[in-house]
Image 1 (cartoon, rainbow, N blue to C red):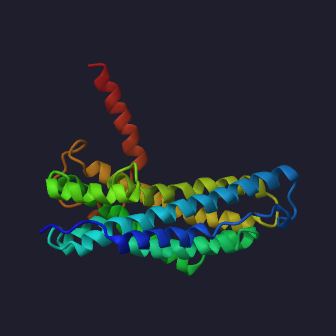
Image 2: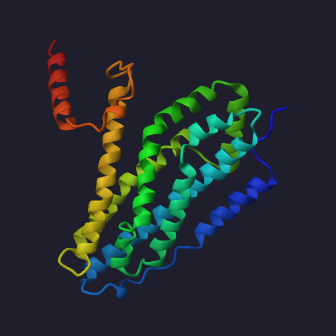
Image 3: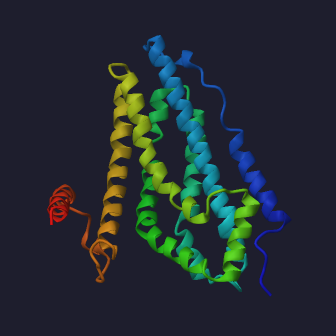
Length: 268
């Protein structure tokens, strides 16, 4: 007997988790930001609203993955091995736990740019963003597992049922790209804040937050680059994972050589 993906309790849990984050956002008062001209105030209000609203959307995506896919698969151990479920979802639950608290802090401090920026600088945030190192390293295998599972009719039907119950347009594999996409979005938002707070009392804290999250994003990009180099389509690499040898040191040089090689090939 193959267990079904959802029951009434599962649907209730998802509805509750979405309700928990939907109540966090409230109107941002630009009057609380001093030393800024009218144009800067409007821009900052928009950026802070975008930061919080996109964080809220991301949090809902994480909750949907955990409650809508991972939890039903954990309950269906006659179809999914516990080790397989762990390999698919990696550490998505701790990431979700971190971002729930992170979203609450962003919402709490949205009227004070210093405190808002400091959300990126706390020890808790450093540990939370460090979770992405493991996730980024292991997500290629996760996606391969999902692709393989979709070839089995029973597994395919189960995952499609989860997707339908969540009213998702995109498949699970697309949602497992969201964490990396989110990390790479933070520097863009903070850079916008930096532009409109330059020369004000808020500048130093915004700069520090941008430096911190940019370091995280750069590391994630290096991990992704090494994974690209490992792929059979590029190098035919069959040895140990390149990440075992450390981070990529000559990314720019390799990129330049690649362009030169491709330009030479095009003339042959």
